[in-house]
Length: 300
Image (cartoon, rainbow, N blue to C red; front, side, top):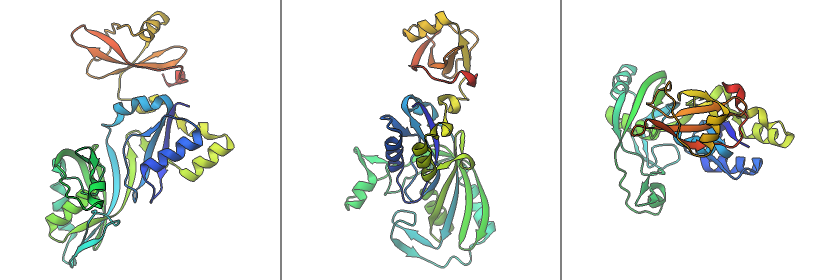
């Protein structure tokens, strides 16, 4: 079972629990996801099955879009509603004009400190484990990029905003930082991931619906082919002899393929058969991932 399911993660479940549920339903040993959602968050969680797990490394850099509710005037230990309230103030004087000015300062490449309660590791241990054990945690700032922030609604003291950003962005930290800059404090009240790369919330399926599909044997229509998420990689079709060389790990020449990215290779019968990387020293393409038989011939 090779492909990707666009799951609409429910609130209260960890991303790991969703993966475990799909592993149980599908009886597929190799199951993974391409980007963790916090337990309280909902929305798009692409789940990769079988050989699809081998391409996760190629999609981690795709942008994601979130819809967040941020409540000003309160701060919490976890920067979201799961933690204890540690600060309160009256945010009645906060205006929409101020919000627009402040959010604009976070667009572009910025330095962000992850929450203390997060999966980021410190000396090999997730920060949330250390924090829950009462140990000192020292999250390190890292570079992220926020492409845009749009204020969708302002119902004081709650702002609903849409964020498009790169991997590694913590919307909880963004909410906390917005609260600090305005001077009122803030926490993430709710979060929905509406897009992750090629997958959108409108096309996502709930876990209950996916469970019913597996039980009824109609699950195949919800499994996207592996190359559904590889549109940004150039593609080419090769003949049978070249396909055989690739399967045997032999480097090949592809003079008409752009060399700035990996490329997808198809053969006429099998569809997607491999992903190749370009070697500038030899000017040849070498197999990076070679797949077993995949039914993606109609993707060309």
